[in-house]
Length: 308
Image (cartoon, rainbow, N blue to C red):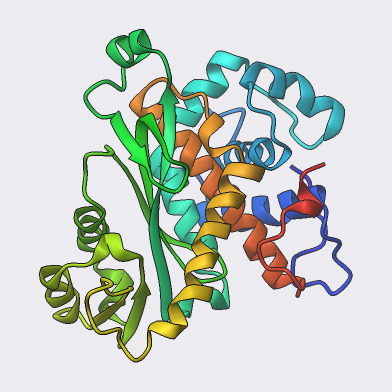
């Protein structure tokens, strides 16, 4: 992939080509030279992740259609493109790489050091018919759950996301709807102790689903404070007036993922497939925030400049 101006250039434009080039350079520099023995892959890992981000930003859900769409709309950007089957296999196998790339790109912004995080979970539907629920490779992991905000039942997973108020992903996980939000938050933080080990006084804002004296103690032992609404029959905390505007931000982040990045239309049919497609969309949102921040755009999480 060709190299153009870097994101620190004051004349850089906020368009899809500039974002993809900057992201490719960032990931390629991070990965360095491949350590594998033998002939190098015709499509490098940096190119694979860049293609995956472009697909999510441009909203082309079909992989076969995307590989036909790409040469016409980004001519010459990628010297080699695999077939649909090869692209699908590479993308599924790249799930660990996608997870690490999200962290690397996110940590390259000043927002990474925000001392306030917001957490919530949102449904990721994986099927609607009863035969799908019985025969799917996701059976046993996915399950039935209830979405209170939309008053509906769904079959699938829940995305548990910890992010900054601007929407920059800090950590995330996919879990069965039967997993309690408090358990999911504990598991995320236990899996990523380095996230808060060097931070003091980190504040996490959540909703009533995270009310638990045990969780409060567990977080306090690690120097984290949890702020969430009190029950109606309890005396409100002095700082609860701060919750409402910040709580609306996580809903806005979920709307970005579902409305602009088609989170629930991922099309994954296996554990690796769903995980890779969700990570693909999170990396796309992270890349847009990273590029908008580097180019001093007024709206940090805007994807409008990159969806066409």
